[in-house]
Image 1 (tube, one colour):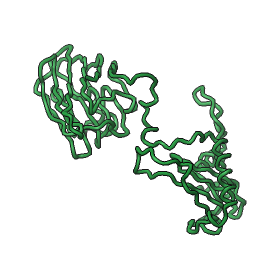
Image 2 (cartoon, rainbow, N blue to C red; image 1 turned 45 degrees about the vertical axis):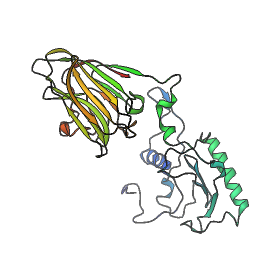
Image 3 (tube, rainbow, N blue to C red; image 1 turned 90 degrees about the vertical axis):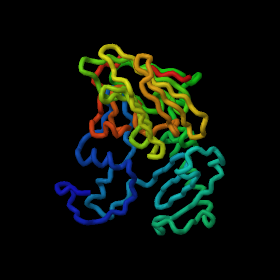
Image 4 (tube, helix red, strand yellow; image 1 turned 180 degrees about the vertical axis):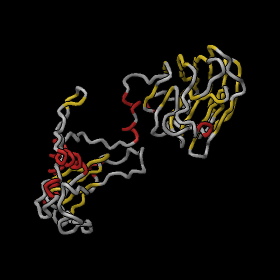
Length: 332
């Protein structure tokens, strides 16, 4: 921490226990700003961290954060007065498994006041202390709304699973300014589907992204370049395909359509055909496709973050220069 006007100590180390949630309270105290009770009309929960400012000029100050829980996908830990108990369930690179019971996962126990690197597991030698910390974890989990614990990983992050009723099979969006998280936009690949865009082409032609989802690493984009429709599918440099259009767009109201027919391969490949006003305007083969396309959004009218196609990598958002009346998506 560097604050010449506010911290007298220079080049020193502090050993009080703190957590990342303590950063905001520290900034608020240092700037003498009260935490807001309301933001944009929404009542705010109390700030749960503890300011670190008390230690700035007192290296031996007693810790003000004496307890801190940790939990992620039922990997659990609790710090309490120099002790840490922890239980691991699952590993971050296995995102889809549903085996095992996290309640059966073993716990470890460390006295970090004496064993900072957590080299000596004391769980077997001190079961009473372990039990105390396990109880403490449950208390903190209840206090801070951690419960119920949920061991799912990728499944838990998939917003489309939170929708009630039958999954949708068609979607319609209007205008040039649509931005949604990719999982709650149209769920197309690797299933057969059509994309139909009703656009207005001004005099002199048009260019830009009509609709897209995903990123430079994995994603798809329907766009116009040199007044011709193009389709790009990107799969981590192992299945990247650009399908160029063969028909220039006429002036006025135009219907641009793509139709994807799966080939039944486990890689999710298939044939994609483009149409302009119901006339064939380009065809190509996708060698593989994905059911998710990374963290970047589904969009209509532009590609805002990283370019899915190298054709417009240096063109910023490559916004569509005509008017998009609507874009409809339908599973076949």
